[in-house]
Length: 141
Image (cartoon, rainbow, N blue to C red; front, side, top):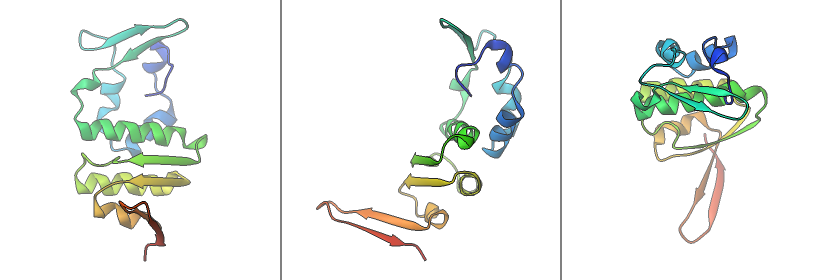
């Protein structure tokens, strides 16, 4: 979840990492994400660290999106702005609501690009860009 990490560190996630995973709706996957290397995983040998990458290929697209949100939440102590491009497009509406609620609570400023009207309620303004290059930026009521 956090790069670079030594194998022994991955096996013992920090409280912040566990919080980020749980907040991003991946509580059931904390053990899976920290499992020991096996035939379904990959170990990359870098110049300074050895990283264990769990078999995230088995994750659905929605679960991968949740993992990216966990990374975002983990880094909120150092990040002030997040640009989110179709960040919940593969999630069901309930998960999307939970994820955006967490983003609203923990990310100081975020800009979303999306096609679902359901994400509008988590934003204060809307920027519409028209084909002719004109745009409008208006508060959402």
